[in-house]
Amino acid sequence: MSEQLNVAMVAGETSGDLLAGLLLGGLKARWPDLHSHGIGGPKMAAHGFEAWWPYEKLAVHGFNMEVLRRFREIWGIRRELGDRLLAQRPDVFVGVDAPDFNLGLESRLKEAGIKTVHFVSPSIWAWRGGRINKIHRSADHILCLFPFEPELYHAKGIAATYVGHPLADAIPMDVPRAAARQRLGLTEAAQVVAVLPGSRRGEIQHIAPAFLQAVALLARQRPELKFVLPVVPGLRQMIEPMVAQWAPDAPLMVLDGQSHDALAACDVTLIASGTATLEAALFKRPMVISYKISGLSWQIMKRMGYLPWVGLPNILLRDFVVPERLQHDATPEQLATDVLAWLDQPARAQAVVQRFTELHHVLRCNTAQAATDAIAQVIEGR
Image 1 (tube, rainbow, N blue to C red):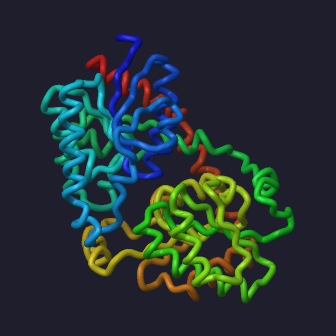
Image 2 (image 1 turned 90 degrees about the vertical axis):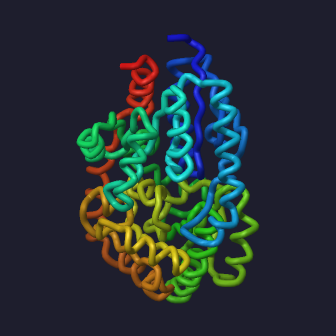
Image 3 (image 1 turned 180 degrees about the vertical axis):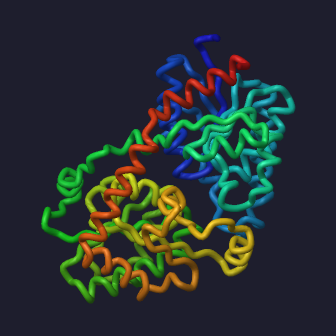
């Protein structure tokens, strides 16, 4: 195989950029002259990735008018990207999550003879199970983050490899709580709540008001509490007016990024459903998972769901280990009550730490190396 590997990639949001950045680290270690390009963000750029479009172009939320308004733009990006890749013919295309965008692109590339890998199995085990037929047409290989997934694909004749979760490699087994608190200027004795209302504008618009109202309630009930709210780059101007409206007097620190410091430092986190909940579990943190979307999106998702759980920690542990407050149940009063329950029940919190530690061991597999090995086999036609 040539030492100068040409890899095209697409990551469609902050979590995908993080996963793709970790994967690029493994690829670069194996192929130092790696050339990578496509759609991505700063974590990918740190490994020399050439972003033809920023990942924010693909970030939409739910099944709503935002999706309809931006459909033409996103469809146009996918068509233009496909044209460029067909002209340049990379050694392999790796679609990182974003299945609604990537699977259609992968199908077009695969049909033209370009090797395609999809990194992060779409949640066929949770909802939209019919999508597996589209996956079969689109991807030569699936890189699975969770150990139960490959068997589902093998049963349908789809090549798949369990590679573990890269976050389990990146996040230390022993949480650096004291160091994180020092970086954030928090004392060891403080009780700290991390507030993570999502990484996309649509998520924040729906979720942040209830989260911030819960913060205001908690601050009134427990004035000694401290709050930290990490914000992804570019969204601080959106968050700060919401803080001023809903929690103006709360001792809340808005952070530029630093979500891992916030999770390492906190005693409990109020968190939007998504990849961040797995990060919180790997930091061994009790949490309250919540999610709110438009009414239409909620009705669609309810009809498509297969499992009783929404949050990744609960799905992986097959149990309601942490509370989930969704849509109409995500009231500020309920969220505040759930947060206080964790703070007031240390034995319950410690039991969750033990379960999350066991999960961390299962998911730690040197993902970058395992994924790189699988991609090499795809390129070599094995």
